[in-house]
Amino acid sequence: KAGVTQTPRYLIKTRGQQVTLSCSPISGHRSVSWYQQTPGQGLQFLFEYFSETQRNKGNFPGRFSGRQFSNSRSEMNVSTLELGDSALYLCASSPVAGGAVNEQFFGPGTRLTVL
Amino acid sequence: QKEVEQNSGPLSVPEGAIASLNCTYSDRGSQSFFWYRQYSGKSPELIMFIYSNGDKEDGRFTAQLNKASQYVSLLIRDSQPSDSATYLCAGYSSASKIIFGSGTRLSIRP
Image (cartoon, each protein chain N blue to C red):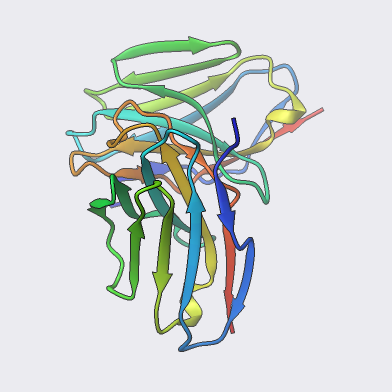
C-alpha cells in the first residue's frame, strides 16, 4: 500500500506570495491533518479534515487555510507569505476522524522557504 | 506552560543500556498519548500509543502512563545506535487535537 505523498517536496517563495501544498493520504484513509514544524516551535497542529469537512483547527492566522476533496486528497494554502512561515509542512493521514486511538501516518513533508 | 513538555536533551545513553524518555502534560482531559520517532530530515513515525494507566510493551519499547501524575514515559531496552533520533511525545487533548511536545534528542553512544 502506498504511503502518504506530499507535493511539492521543496518550495521557495518570496514574502507576500501565496502557496498551495498538496497531500494524498493512504488509500482508504479519510482523515487528513496538517502540521507545521519549525526548530523553535516544534510540531504544531494546523487543521484536520474528514469527509471534506474541517473537524478541528489549530491556533494559526486566517492566512492558513485548507480543504479536502471527495477522494480525500487535501490541499493547504498560505496567503501573503511571511518569513516566519518558513517551515516543514507535514501531512498525516488516518483511517477515521479523531486521533484518540488512531494511528497517524506522516508524509515526507514539504519544505517551504520564504525569502 | 506548554500543554506537553519534554526535556529537549540531548540524552546520551551507552549502547545496550535502557533509555528513559519522559513527558508531562497539563490537560487532565487528555485521553491518549503517542510516542513518535523522528530521524533527522525525516518525518515522524509512530512507535506506540497508550491510553490506559500502566505499562504497554512492544518489543524493546515500553510506554508508561500515569494519569494521576500526568506523566508519560518511553523506555527503550537494549538501546542500539539506530535508536538515535528525536522522540516526540504527543497527547490527544480534550479539545480533540493532537498536541506535540518539542521532542527529546536521544544519542546512543557505541
